[in-house]
Amino acid sequence: MKFIFYILSFFICFAVLGQNQTFFEKGNAFYNEGKYAEAIDSYNAILDTGQHSADLYFNLANAHYKLNNIAPSIYYYEKALKLSPNDDDIINNMAFAKNMTIDDIDVVPDAGFSKLIKNTTNKMTFDAWAKTSVVFVFCFVILFLVYYFAYSTLNKRLAFIGSVTSILMAIITLAFAFHKSSIEANDNPAIVFVQESKVRSNPNSKSEESFRLHEGTKVQVIETYNDWKEIKLSDGKTGWLASEDIKLLNDF
Image (cartoon, rainbow, N blue to C red; front, side, top):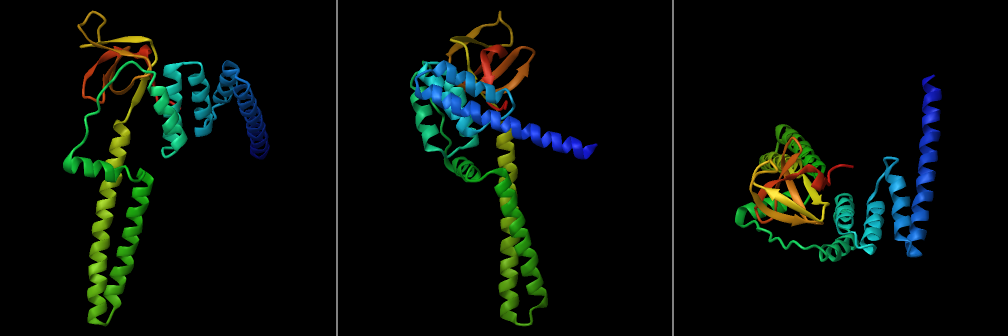
């Protein structure tokens, strides 16, 4: 029975992939014909099957951009960038889309040692840092064995220095891995999806209005309370807005 189940699952997956490829090609054809709404429908049909990719999000964002749909275009460019962070086409097109937004929010830059640590941490993913740490641990073990069995004083000295360096590097890279994990865990971005959202001082519609945000603006969600989200802007401002006003980027 399990064998039959696996066979059926394989054919179902194969059929879905084939269907999604058809939707993707149809969406591209609609886009090239200037039928952007139809292209969006085709791309969304792929998302409805649970499949996604940087190319799909990128094309979906382009179609929304052509229709001047500010929030959706930025939202899907951001999604594409999460899957392909070094893609120049995504970065450039998103810059054009962000030119359509109203809010001009300054970015508070990191400085000094904090900036150095953050930039270094973001050089690699958590998995890459963790794998690098494992490699240094492996080097430590090998060099320690060389030190233990070596007869020459020079070889012992070199092996000792190498093993100490390796274990220190293992600790440092492991620390970067944990720091990267912490950054990713606290990274909960969202895009404002309403034309205008009133940001309150407290999670209550009767509380004082702090400021207003407009569609396409990117925020960081730091807390949830009932139907409210506490958000933080790149300039350090915080406040509460209705959960329905934003769409989380980490939802795939």
